[in-house]
Image (cartoon, rainbow, N blue to C red; front, side, top):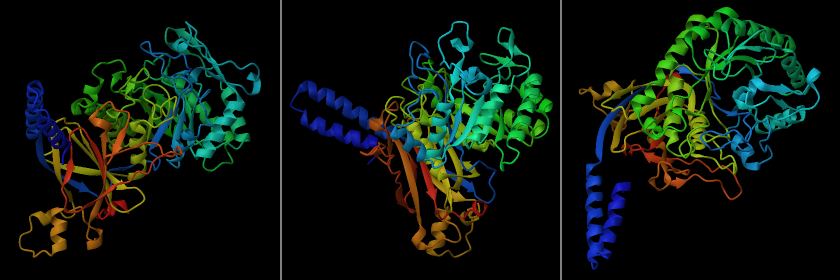
Length: 560
C-alpha cells in the first residue's frame, strides 16, 4: 500500500468512528475526500533508462567521499545563531566513541583540515615555539578573529585520531604568513614559508602520514576575506613544491600538492597554472556553495528545483575546461562544499531534504570529472554530517556512507526516455562487486516514476521479432539489466529506498526501506540492509524520495 493510500485508509477508519458526531462527521468526510482526491491525483509516469556499461565516462578516486574539519571557534556566529561549539580542529573531542565509529565506518575517509581561519593558524614549532593562544574575537582581524595557534600536542592528538580511524588527511597550510595587506582585501609580498616548513619537518619526524598538503583557503579571484594575485600565489606554490620534494625525497609516494582551495575565477585559475608551470600542482581544488546564504527562506525550494541544481554544471564545465587547457597534468577535486554558505541553513542543512542536494551534487560532480568531493563539514555548523553535541549522524551522513559503499569509481552514461526533469538519474559501476548501481532522486512532490532499465548491449532485443526467445531471454529483454552471464538464481536486485521519518522533509531521521537509521544501543553505526527485490517487480521511485539500486547481474564490460 502506498503512503497516500495508507493515509486515506486511516482517515476512512476515523470517518467510520466519528459518524455519530455531526462535527466529527463533517471534518472526517472532508479529510477523507481530500485524501482520496490527492491519492487519485498522484501522477504515475512510465519512463525508461538505458545504461551504458561498456566504457565509463570517468573514474573517480576510490575514496571519493571526503569531509572537512574546520577551525571555527565556538563564538563563530551567523544570523544570531552560533552553530560551531566544540567542533574545531583545536577543541573537537577526538576521544568520543561515536565520532571514532562514524569515521571508521568509511574504512578510509578523506578528511580535509582547513577553512576560513587556516591562513591565520600559527604552528607552535621551531622558531615560533612559545606561548600558544587560541582564536579570539578581534574586530579588525580577518573574519573578525585573531591569529590562532596549533600546539604540537594537539597535532599529535589529531594524528593519533587519523591513524586510529585510518583517515586520509589533507592539511591546509597558512598561505598568508609573511604577507601584508596592501589594500582592503588584497594581500601582497612573498610568502614566509619558515613556519610551514618546520611544521612539515615535525610531521615527518613523528611518522605521521599526510596524503596531501593544501596551500591557503579561498585566496583566489576576488577572495573572500583576502586575496593574493595569481602571479605571486603561483610563485609561492613553486616554493612549496620544492619544500615538499626536498623533505619527502626518500618517500614513495610523496604527498600531493593541492591548490588553490577557492571559488572559481577563470582568469585567476588560468594564470595560476601558467605561472606555476607543469606538474607543480597535483590537484586543483574548487569551493562551491551553489545554494547561496544559509538564511535564504527559499533554501528548500532551491534544493528541490532541478533547473536550479543543474546550474552548477556550468561551473563544473568551466573548471574542467580550464584544467584541460592550462594544467592537464592536474586532477580536480571539490575541496569544500556545504550547499549553503555561512554555516549552512538552520533546520535545513542537517535534515533529510538536504540529501536531495547532496546526493545530486556528488553524482553531478563525478560526471564532470571530479576525483574527490569534500563535504563541509564532518562536524560543525548547520551542515555537519554529525550532530555537533551528540555526534549522532545526520541524514547526509548515511547518504555519504551509502555512496561510499555502493558507488564504484566508474561513472556510467545513462540515456533517458520519457523522463521528466524532476527525476535525476545517475549510474556507476558497483563498488566491490560485479554489476552497476543506479541512483534515483525524485524531486517531484506528486509524480511517481515507474521505470524500465535497459542495458545498451541488449537494447536491440526490444525490436527483434524473428528470434525465438527463451524464458530467460524474455526476462533479459524486458528487464535488460541482466547480462549475458546471468543465471536463473541471479535474477534479482538490491534496493536502498531513502525516505524521511513521518513524511517530514525536515526530519533529522532518515528511513532506509522503512526503518529508521539510528545508532545501535552500543553506539555503533547501523547495518545498511537492502531490500532484495525480484527481477519481475517494477522499479518505482515515489515522490520526494531517493533510491540506490544495485544490479549485480548487469553485463557491464567496462566495470571489470
